[in-house]
Length: 356
Image (tube, rainbow, N blue to C red; front, side, top):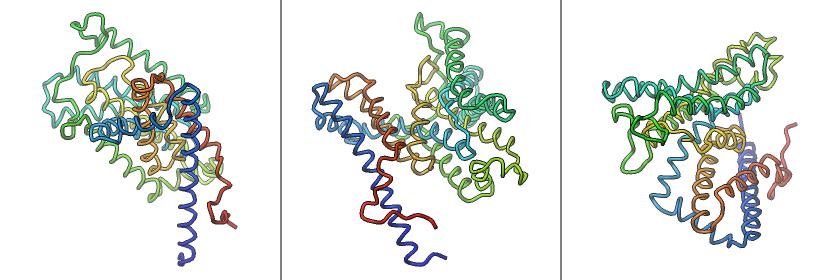
Protein backbone atom coordinates (compact mmCIF):
# COMPACT_ATOMS: atom_id res chain seq x y z
CA UNK A 1 0.00 0.00 0.00
CA UNK A 2 1.24 3.47 -0.80
CA UNK A 3 1.74 5.84 2.12
CA UNK A 4 1.38 9.62 2.04
CA UNK A 5 5.03 10.19 1.17
CA UNK A 6 4.84 7.74 -1.74
CA UNK A 7 1.74 9.41 -3.13
CA UNK A 8 3.35 12.82 -2.78
CA UNK A 9 6.45 11.55 -4.58
CA UNK A 10 4.34 10.17 -7.44
CA UNK A 11 2.46 13.46 -7.67
CA UNK A 12 5.71 15.40 -7.87
CA UNK A 13 7.00 13.09 -10.60
CA UNK A 14 3.82 13.50 -12.65
CA UNK A 15 3.82 17.28 -12.22
CA UNK A 16 7.50 17.45 -13.13
CA UNK A 17 6.81 15.35 -16.21
CA UNK A 18 3.99 17.69 -17.20
CA UNK A 19 6.29 20.69 -16.83
CA UNK A 20 8.92 18.99 -18.99
CA UNK A 21 6.32 18.36 -21.67
CA UNK A 22 5.18 21.98 -21.57
CA UNK A 23 8.80 23.10 -21.87
CA UNK A 24 9.24 20.89 -24.93
CA UNK A 25 6.18 22.38 -26.62
CA UNK A 26 7.30 25.89 -25.71
CA UNK A 27 10.70 25.23 -27.28
CA UNK A 28 9.05 23.97 -30.48
CA UNK A 29 6.87 27.09 -30.66
CA UNK A 30 9.92 29.28 -30.05
CA UNK A 31 11.90 27.63 -32.85
CA UNK A 32 8.92 27.96 -35.20
CA UNK A 33 8.70 31.64 -34.23
CA UNK A 34 12.27 32.02 -35.46
CA UNK A 35 11.22 30.42 -38.75
CA UNK A 36 8.41 32.98 -39.05
CA UNK A 37 10.86 35.79 -38.34
CA UNK A 38 13.16 34.53 -41.09
CA UNK A 39 10.25 34.88 -43.52
CA UNK A 40 9.57 38.38 -42.24
CA UNK A 41 6.40 37.50 -40.33
CA UNK A 42 5.26 38.56 -36.87
CA UNK A 43 5.22 35.42 -34.67
CA UNK A 44 3.00 36.97 -32.00
CA UNK A 45 0.42 37.98 -34.59
CA UNK A 46 0.63 34.58 -36.28
CA UNK A 47 -0.03 32.72 -33.03
CA UNK A 48 -2.83 35.16 -32.17
CA UNK A 49 -4.43 34.50 -35.57
CA UNK A 50 -4.21 30.74 -35.03
CA UNK A 51 -5.80 31.05 -31.58
CA UNK A 52 -8.65 33.27 -32.75
CA UNK A 53 -9.47 31.04 -35.71
CA UNK A 54 -9.49 27.80 -33.70
CA UNK A 55 -10.30 27.77 -30.00
CA UNK A 56 -11.02 31.50 -29.90
CA UNK A 57 -14.58 31.05 -31.19
CA UNK A 58 -17.38 28.50 -30.97
CA UNK A 59 -17.18 27.80 -34.69
CA UNK A 60 -13.41 27.42 -34.58
CA UNK A 61 -13.61 25.05 -31.63
CA UNK A 62 -16.19 22.91 -33.46
CA UNK A 63 -13.89 22.70 -36.48
CA UNK A 64 -11.06 21.61 -34.19
CA UNK A 65 -13.28 18.80 -32.88
CA UNK A 66 -14.09 17.78 -36.46
CA UNK A 67 -10.39 17.10 -36.98
CA UNK A 68 -9.90 15.59 -33.53
CA UNK A 69 -12.29 12.74 -34.39
CA UNK A 70 -10.18 11.05 -37.13
CA UNK A 71 -6.94 12.00 -35.37
CA UNK A 72 -7.89 10.19 -32.17
CA UNK A 73 -9.03 7.09 -34.05
CA UNK A 74 -5.89 6.99 -36.21
CA UNK A 75 -3.67 7.55 -33.17
CA UNK A 76 -5.35 4.65 -31.36
CA UNK A 77 -4.65 2.55 -34.45
CA UNK A 78 -0.96 3.16 -33.77
CA UNK A 79 -1.13 2.95 -29.98
CA UNK A 80 -2.70 -0.50 -29.78
CA UNK A 81 -0.11 -2.40 -31.89
CA UNK A 82 2.67 -0.50 -30.12
CA UNK A 83 1.68 -2.27 -26.90
CA UNK A 84 2.92 -5.55 -28.37
CA UNK A 85 5.93 -4.01 -30.06
CA UNK A 86 4.44 -3.49 -33.53
CA UNK A 87 4.83 -0.31 -35.56
CA UNK A 88 1.70 0.44 -37.58
CA UNK A 89 2.47 3.15 -40.14
CA UNK A 90 -0.53 2.12 -42.22
CA UNK A 91 -3.26 4.20 -40.63
CA UNK A 92 -3.71 6.22 -43.82
CA UNK A 93 -4.28 3.15 -45.97
CA UNK A 94 -6.57 1.55 -43.39
CA UNK A 95 -8.54 4.80 -43.25
CA UNK A 96 -8.94 4.77 -47.03
CA UNK A 97 -10.05 1.14 -47.14
CA UNK A 98 -12.58 1.69 -44.37
CA UNK A 99 -14.02 4.55 -46.38
CA UNK A 100 -14.00 2.45 -49.56
CA UNK A 101 -15.89 -0.50 -48.08
CA UNK A 102 -18.39 1.81 -46.40
CA UNK A 103 -18.89 3.56 -49.75
CA UNK A 104 -19.57 0.23 -51.42
CA UNK A 105 -22.18 -0.53 -48.78
CA UNK A 106 -23.79 2.90 -49.06
CA UNK A 107 -24.05 2.66 -52.83
CA UNK A 108 -25.35 -0.91 -52.63
CA UNK A 109 -28.20 -0.19 -50.21
CA UNK A 110 -29.01 3.34 -51.41
CA UNK A 111 -31.95 4.64 -49.40
CA UNK A 112 -33.57 1.22 -48.97
CA UNK A 113 -32.67 0.90 -45.29
CA UNK A 114 -33.86 2.96 -42.34
CA UNK A 115 -31.21 4.96 -40.52
CA UNK A 116 -31.41 2.68 -37.49
CA UNK A 117 -30.00 -0.12 -39.68
CA UNK A 118 -28.08 1.82 -42.32
CA UNK A 119 -25.84 3.79 -39.97
CA UNK A 120 -24.71 0.79 -37.86
CA UNK A 121 -24.09 -1.09 -41.12
CA UNK A 122 -21.76 1.67 -42.35
CA UNK A 123 -19.92 1.64 -39.02
CA UNK A 124 -19.40 -2.12 -39.28
CA UNK A 125 -18.25 -1.91 -42.90
CA UNK A 126 -15.83 0.90 -42.11
CA UNK A 127 -14.33 -1.08 -39.25
CA UNK A 128 -14.08 -4.30 -41.28
CA UNK A 129 -12.55 -2.52 -44.29
CA UNK A 130 -9.73 -1.04 -42.24
CA UNK A 131 -9.31 -4.21 -40.21
CA UNK A 132 -8.96 -6.50 -43.21
CA UNK A 133 -6.42 -4.16 -44.78
CA UNK A 134 -4.36 -4.22 -41.57
CA UNK A 135 -4.66 -8.00 -41.42
CA UNK A 136 -2.44 -8.31 -44.51
CA UNK A 137 0.74 -6.92 -42.89
CA UNK A 138 -0.26 -8.64 -39.63
CA UNK A 139 -0.25 -12.04 -41.37
CA UNK A 140 3.07 -11.30 -43.07
CA UNK A 141 4.56 -10.25 -39.72
CA UNK A 142 3.18 -13.26 -37.86
CA UNK A 143 4.74 -15.56 -40.45
CA UNK A 144 8.04 -13.72 -40.20
CA UNK A 145 7.99 -12.91 -43.92
CA UNK A 146 7.95 -9.11 -43.82
CA UNK A 147 8.37 -6.40 -41.20
CA UNK A 148 5.08 -4.63 -40.48
CA UNK A 149 6.68 -1.17 -40.58
CA UNK A 150 7.55 -1.60 -44.24
CA UNK A 151 4.38 -3.42 -45.30
CA UNK A 152 1.96 -1.03 -43.59
CA UNK A 153 3.73 1.98 -45.08
CA UNK A 154 3.72 0.58 -48.62
CA UNK A 155 0.09 -0.51 -48.39
CA UNK A 156 -0.89 3.13 -47.80
CA UNK A 157 -0.10 3.92 -51.41
CA UNK A 158 -1.88 0.82 -52.65
CA UNK A 159 -5.03 1.79 -50.74
CA UNK A 160 -5.02 5.28 -52.23
CA UNK A 161 -4.71 3.79 -55.71
CA UNK A 162 -7.62 1.44 -55.05
CA UNK A 163 -9.81 4.34 -53.98
CA UNK A 164 -8.80 6.32 -57.06
CA UNK A 165 -9.60 3.33 -59.27
CA UNK A 166 -13.15 3.04 -57.92
CA UNK A 167 -13.81 6.78 -57.84
CA UNK A 168 -12.66 7.19 -61.43
CA UNK A 169 -14.42 3.96 -62.44
CA UNK A 170 -17.30 1.94 -60.96
CA UNK A 171 -18.24 4.41 -58.21
CA UNK A 172 -18.02 7.59 -60.30
CA UNK A 173 -21.07 9.81 -60.34
CA UNK A 174 -22.16 10.01 -64.02
CA UNK A 175 -23.29 13.60 -63.44
CA UNK A 176 -19.97 14.78 -62.02
CA UNK A 177 -18.48 15.43 -65.49
CA UNK A 178 -14.70 15.45 -65.19
CA UNK A 179 -14.69 15.78 -61.41
CA UNK A 180 -14.18 12.30 -59.92
CA UNK A 181 -16.46 11.51 -57.00
CA UNK A 182 -19.16 9.07 -56.05
CA UNK A 183 -22.82 9.95 -55.93
CA UNK A 184 -24.11 11.64 -52.79
CA UNK A 185 -24.97 9.10 -50.11
CA UNK A 186 -28.52 8.70 -48.83
CA UNK A 187 -29.27 10.40 -45.51
CA UNK A 188 -30.23 7.03 -44.02
CA UNK A 189 -26.61 5.84 -44.12
CA UNK A 190 -24.86 9.07 -43.18
CA UNK A 191 -23.61 9.74 -39.66
CA UNK A 192 -25.71 12.38 -37.90
CA UNK A 193 -24.26 15.73 -36.89
CA UNK A 194 -24.29 16.99 -33.33
CA UNK A 195 -26.29 20.20 -33.10
CA UNK A 196 -25.76 22.77 -35.84
CA UNK A 197 -22.01 22.15 -36.15
CA UNK A 198 -20.07 19.75 -38.38
CA UNK A 199 -19.12 17.66 -35.35
CA UNK A 200 -20.62 14.26 -36.03
CA UNK A 201 -21.41 10.95 -34.34
CA UNK A 202 -17.82 9.83 -34.97
CA UNK A 203 -16.94 11.80 -31.83
CA UNK A 204 -19.03 9.36 -29.80
CA UNK A 205 -17.36 6.41 -31.54
CA UNK A 206 -13.93 7.84 -30.76
CA UNK A 207 -14.77 8.36 -27.09
CA UNK A 208 -16.15 4.84 -26.80
CA UNK A 209 -13.03 3.40 -28.42
CA UNK A 210 -10.83 5.45 -26.12
CA UNK A 211 -12.61 4.35 -22.94
CA UNK A 212 -12.74 0.69 -23.98
CA UNK A 213 -9.07 0.58 -24.94
CA UNK A 214 -8.02 2.34 -21.75
CA UNK A 215 -9.97 -0.16 -19.65
CA UNK A 216 -8.75 -3.18 -21.60
CA UNK A 217 -5.11 -2.12 -21.56
CA UNK A 218 -5.08 -1.16 -17.88
CA UNK A 219 -7.55 -3.50 -16.21
CA UNK A 220 -7.71 -6.80 -18.09
CA UNK A 221 -5.61 -9.86 -18.59
CA UNK A 222 -5.46 -9.08 -22.31
CA UNK A 223 -3.78 -5.77 -21.58
CA UNK A 224 -1.33 -7.41 -19.19
CA UNK A 225 -0.39 -10.06 -21.73
CA UNK A 226 0.04 -7.39 -24.41
CA UNK A 227 2.51 -5.56 -22.19
CA UNK A 228 4.32 -8.83 -21.58
CA UNK A 229 4.61 -9.51 -25.31
CA UNK A 230 5.77 -5.99 -26.03
CA UNK A 231 8.32 -6.08 -23.23
CA UNK A 232 9.86 -9.46 -24.03
CA UNK A 233 8.25 -11.44 -26.86
CA UNK A 234 10.60 -14.39 -26.48
CA UNK A 235 9.80 -14.78 -22.79
CA UNK A 236 6.10 -14.40 -23.56
CA UNK A 237 6.36 -17.15 -26.16
CA UNK A 238 8.08 -19.47 -23.69
CA UNK A 239 5.27 -18.87 -21.23
CA UNK A 240 2.77 -20.02 -23.83
CA UNK A 241 1.22 -16.72 -24.86
CA UNK A 242 -0.37 -16.96 -28.34
CA UNK A 243 1.74 -14.25 -29.98
CA UNK A 244 0.49 -14.95 -33.52
CA UNK A 245 -3.11 -14.57 -32.39
CA UNK A 246 -2.29 -11.33 -30.61
CA UNK A 247 -0.60 -9.92 -33.70
CA UNK A 248 -3.56 -10.74 -35.94
CA UNK A 249 -6.29 -9.60 -33.56
CA UNK A 250 -4.48 -6.46 -32.44
CA UNK A 251 -3.72 -5.31 -35.97
CA UNK A 252 -7.27 -6.07 -37.13
CA UNK A 253 -8.73 -3.94 -34.33
CA UNK A 254 -6.18 -1.19 -34.97
CA UNK A 255 -6.97 -1.14 -38.67
CA UNK A 256 -10.67 -1.12 -37.84
CA UNK A 257 -10.25 2.02 -35.74
CA UNK A 258 -8.51 3.79 -38.62
CA UNK A 259 -11.24 2.47 -40.91
CA UNK A 260 -13.84 4.13 -38.68
CA UNK A 261 -12.01 7.42 -39.17
CA UNK A 262 -12.28 7.04 -42.94
CA UNK A 263 -15.91 5.98 -42.74
CA UNK A 264 -16.70 9.06 -40.65
CA UNK A 265 -15.06 11.39 -43.14
CA UNK A 266 -17.05 10.14 -46.13
CA UNK A 267 -20.30 9.35 -44.29
CA UNK A 268 -20.46 12.67 -42.44
CA UNK A 269 -18.09 15.41 -43.58
CA UNK A 270 -17.86 14.68 -47.32
CA UNK A 271 -21.16 12.90 -47.91
CA UNK A 272 -19.52 11.02 -50.78
CA UNK A 273 -16.20 9.41 -51.68
CA UNK A 274 -13.61 11.64 -53.31
CA UNK A 275 -9.93 11.04 -54.09
CA UNK A 276 -7.60 12.57 -51.54
CA UNK A 277 -10.38 13.10 -48.98
CA UNK A 278 -7.86 12.69 -46.15
CA UNK A 279 -5.24 15.41 -45.56
CA UNK A 280 -2.99 12.79 -44.00
CA UNK A 281 -4.93 11.85 -40.86
CA UNK A 282 -3.26 8.45 -40.75
CA UNK A 283 0.23 9.93 -40.74
CA UNK A 284 -0.76 12.58 -38.20
CA UNK A 285 -2.21 9.83 -36.03
CA UNK A 286 1.18 8.12 -36.08
CA UNK A 287 2.78 11.39 -34.97
CA UNK A 288 0.21 11.86 -32.21
CA UNK A 289 0.62 8.39 -30.74
CA UNK A 290 4.38 8.79 -30.52
CA UNK A 291 4.08 12.28 -29.06
CA UNK A 292 1.68 10.87 -26.45
CA UNK A 293 4.13 8.03 -25.75
CA UNK A 294 1.33 5.61 -26.65
CA UNK A 295 -0.80 6.78 -23.72
CA UNK A 296 -4.58 6.80 -24.38
CA UNK A 297 -5.19 9.97 -22.38
CA UNK A 298 -2.17 11.65 -23.91
CA UNK A 299 -3.62 10.86 -27.34
CA UNK A 300 -6.61 13.10 -26.61
CA UNK A 301 -4.41 16.05 -25.62
CA UNK A 302 -2.02 15.67 -28.55
CA UNK A 303 -4.89 15.16 -31.02
CA UNK A 304 -6.37 18.45 -29.87
CA UNK A 305 -3.00 20.19 -30.24
CA UNK A 306 -2.30 18.78 -33.70
CA UNK A 307 -5.84 19.64 -34.83
CA UNK A 308 -5.23 23.25 -33.83
CA UNK A 309 -1.92 23.28 -35.69
CA UNK A 310 -3.48 21.69 -38.79
CA UNK A 311 -6.28 24.26 -38.87
CA UNK A 312 -3.70 26.94 -38.18
CA UNK A 313 -2.09 26.14 -41.52
CA UNK A 314 -5.12 27.56 -43.32
CA UNK A 315 -4.99 30.63 -41.10
CA UNK A 316 -1.29 31.23 -41.79
CA UNK A 317 -1.99 31.01 -45.51
CA UNK A 318 -4.67 33.68 -45.34
CA UNK A 319 -3.30 36.09 -42.75
CA UNK A 320 0.46 35.65 -43.07
CA UNK A 321 0.90 34.43 -46.64
CA UNK A 322 2.76 31.35 -45.42
CA UNK A 323 2.50 28.06 -47.34
CA UNK A 324 0.27 25.43 -45.76
CA UNK A 325 3.27 23.11 -45.53
CA UNK A 326 4.72 25.42 -42.88
CA UNK A 327 2.57 23.64 -40.28
CA UNK A 328 4.44 20.45 -41.13
CA UNK A 329 7.58 22.22 -39.95
CA UNK A 330 5.95 22.90 -36.59
CA UNK A 331 4.71 19.31 -36.26
CA UNK A 332 8.18 18.01 -37.10
CA UNK A 333 9.75 20.32 -34.52
CA UNK A 334 7.39 19.08 -31.83
CA UNK A 335 8.10 15.44 -32.69
CA UNK A 336 11.86 16.02 -32.82
CA UNK A 337 12.00 17.85 -29.50
CA UNK A 338 9.64 15.53 -27.61
CA UNK A 339 11.16 12.27 -28.84
CA UNK A 340 14.64 13.76 -28.53
CA UNK A 341 13.90 14.10 -24.79
CA UNK A 342 15.68 17.43 -24.57
CA UNK A 343 14.32 18.11 -21.09
CA UNK A 344 14.46 14.63 -19.59
CA UNK A 345 17.31 15.50 -17.26
CA UNK A 346 15.51 18.54 -15.87
CA UNK A 347 13.71 17.97 -12.58
CA UNK A 348 12.11 21.43 -12.27
CA UNK A 349 12.90 21.76 -8.58
CA UNK A 350 12.77 18.12 -7.53
CA UNK A 351 15.55 15.54 -7.68
CA UNK A 352 15.05 13.08 -10.52
CA UNK A 353 13.62 9.88 -9.04
CA UNK A 354 14.96 6.52 -10.13
CA UNK A 355 13.67 3.11 -9.18
CA UNK A 356 16.07 1.12 -7.04
